[in-house]
Image (cartoon, rainbow, N blue to C red; front, side, top):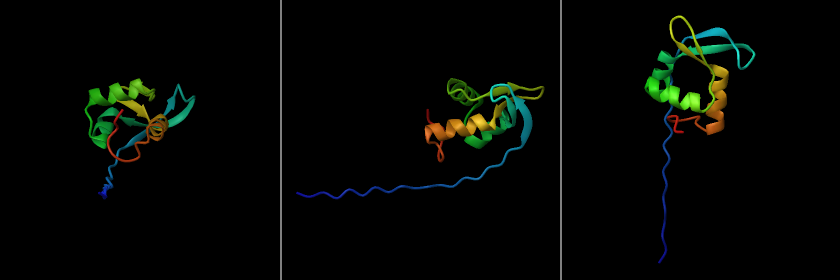
Length: 92
């Protein structure tokens, strides 16, 4: 008996915007764009606790400002690239 396996893959493009602030990242030792944790919640459709848990565990640089916790965009891109999460949710 012969079998045929059909696998369908769906790619969904989602565009979301967030304001960034240029700050000095102590870990990168250079100026970098930072996104607020509040905006990151919306960008990735995750709760603050999920984001902090995954990002801190994965070494994403964070910095506390007067208005919110912020995430270094350079280290965020490194995290996404390392994990292969160029699409979809941030499954760690």
